[in-house]
Image 1 (cartoon, rainbow, N blue to C red):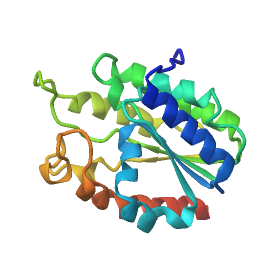
Image 2 (image 1 turned 45 degrees about the vertical axis):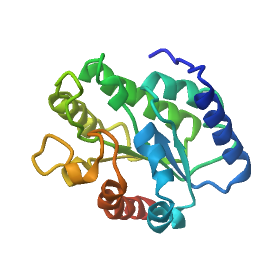
Image 3 (image 1 turned 180 degrees about the vertical axis):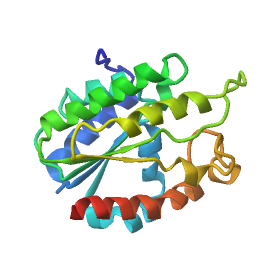
Amino acid sequence: MQAIRRDDEHHQMKHQQILSMIKNLPIETVFFGDSLIRRWEEHPDLWHSFFNSFKPANFGMGADRLENMKWRLTNGELEGFESKLFIFLGGTNNLEDQSAAVIADSIKEIVELIKEHQPTTKIILLGLFPRNPNQEGRSFTEQISEVNDQLARWKPGEYLHFLDLGPLLSSDGQYLDRTLSDDGLHLNAEGYRRIGPSLQQFIAEVFTQ
């Protein structure tokens, strides 16, 4: 996968903010990914309630594709600190134009990149969340299931822990519950409140292993 830099002002400003966090915060746990990670920032009460004891830092970036995440990781976001845990969620923004196999391989590449530069860290790899059909009516359910199946079977080492939170977000096994998302893609406060306890418990278990 080729690393691709985004040149929009928001992306570069957010990237610099992350580099500043690395310099100035005692980071033990990194939340890394796209807007589904970043939007925890919009619910600071939930963020602090669930994760504050793990000394977290949010490295989420809205609209990031996997190739953009690779660019960030190879341009400073893995340097200058030593984490205990990385929580990684990415790939939903690649569903429109890439196959499940390509997306799964790109996710694996990012996991390996994190481990290469942070050799003592543990990694929680989150399965892709369910999402609703796009404006053209296209469903991504089968694609998401294929990606998650490939990731769940991947066992590169004891450092990697896969967690699929999707069943908490979908009553029918296909789409996001309407009460948990306002647009069929991003979680609202209720969505984050739904997954928070399970993610918190899983993090605590990984920390003690």
